[in-house]
Image (cartoon, rainbow, N blue to C red; front, side):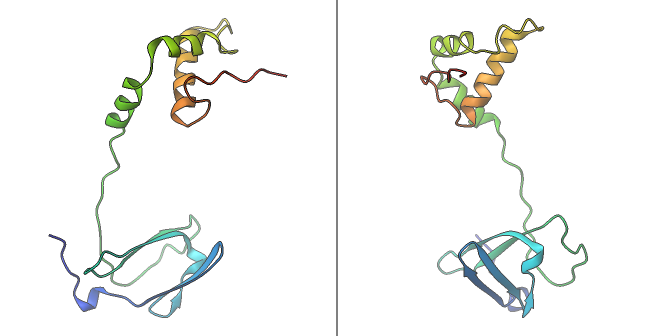
Length: 136
């Protein structure tokens, strides 16, 4: 069950978005210059929630009321395990053996090349099955 905030927890919000920029006001105070990004979530029947991510140079002094939400960073383990389980071992070995940086003569060169290949695939660079670009 999601708790419904009392009226004292709710603040007036105004967002005027124009292309890639937006003006954000909280209770009539412009906070746009202190906000790096925002996310507005509104579930039917619930009070909307506005998440503000402050810029690194934002004024560290802030006073007021806010709904505090404590979260946990997601566990990357299950996603990593699913990614690795989906790889074809033969295709992965071929990709690593064909890398230009495999034969650098350094210690643990195969393992370093394997980890680099997996990281590139995980980031969406050169998906499994795509040839490595030829240096030109």
